[in-house]
Length: 124
Image (cartoon, rainbow, N blue to C red; front, top):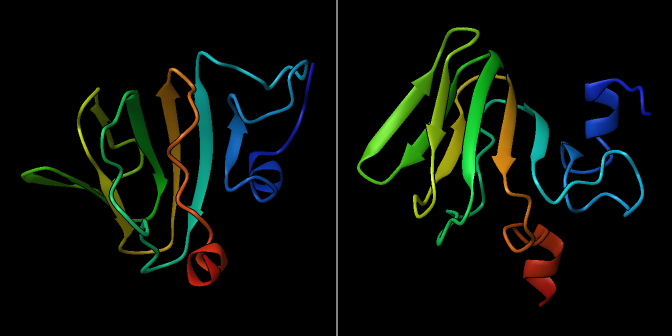
């Protein structure tokens, strides 16, 4: 069992609360699903598009205004509870128009989609 606070726990792992990246044996480790509590300042955006997507994703707006960019379509989430779902093969990116909190659920949980840290990009 694990009891936590999303805002506190998310700060320690790029927002991710559950997924393959948690320690094996921990209740929050899962190869089936990932859950993220994303807190984004205004103007925050994904550093690069996700390409070759092999997961299905659900992104739900908790607060703020958050834009999800999909091929040929831009989806604005503006009211609490607005959400978008996309599947395998759908590239995507995002942009926080205002300070925003979003919850993302992705399945399955597989490695290979993290954007390298800005420091790693500048030194590597």
